[in-house]
Image 1 (cartoon, rainbow over the protein chains, first blue to last red):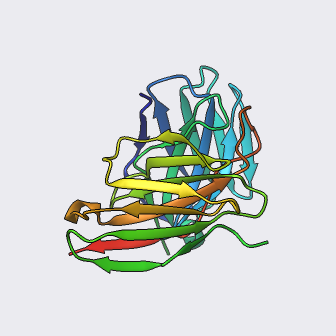
Image 2: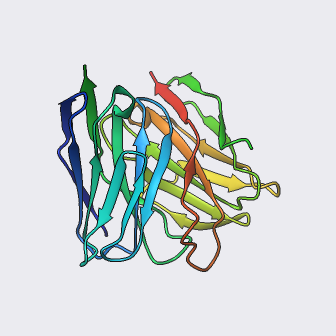
Image 3: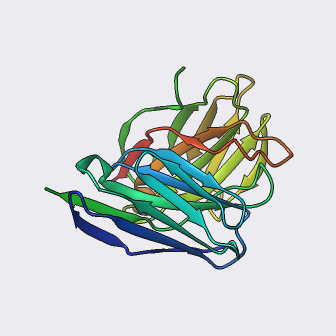
Length: 112
Length: 117
């Protein structure tokens, strides 16, 4: 079965600093999803990547999928307190009905 | 448009009891999935339903069951509750289908926090 490993497990950054979260898969990724979760709440969809080398951006968050499609990174530029939360990567198979497998998450704290 | 709605938001049960959690998907979404998230872990897949049929089941005991109704809403039932069933139960909906839907990610509700004492 597919397993996703996220690093780091937790991160504390000063407001305004850049940061990167990584997600590594044990198998080729057919679809890689990034979600954000506030503590105890549901997951908010951020971005989905499918093609090797693909890169997507939304506001100050950029996600990339490597050419081999086994690793993804999430980069936040000029972090703000609103970026704080748990970031989860999820991987799906090549079917619209394949359930997502998630990593354990990276807890991000942004301090003033 | 309303997102995925789940009820109740919080629930406290005693060991051995039974619980039913409910989920209404986004309008137009035909697939509903259930996930269990324990503290400090990522969500774990429990069930997926599409067009009222079970399309996937995770590694959970038979105490866990679910169903999807004609209006695509869904219920998750857990019998003989154990302390270890305490978790955030998340429901997610998507367009679903039998072909890859590249633009149809899972959309999650805010979950039901279940505490078993």
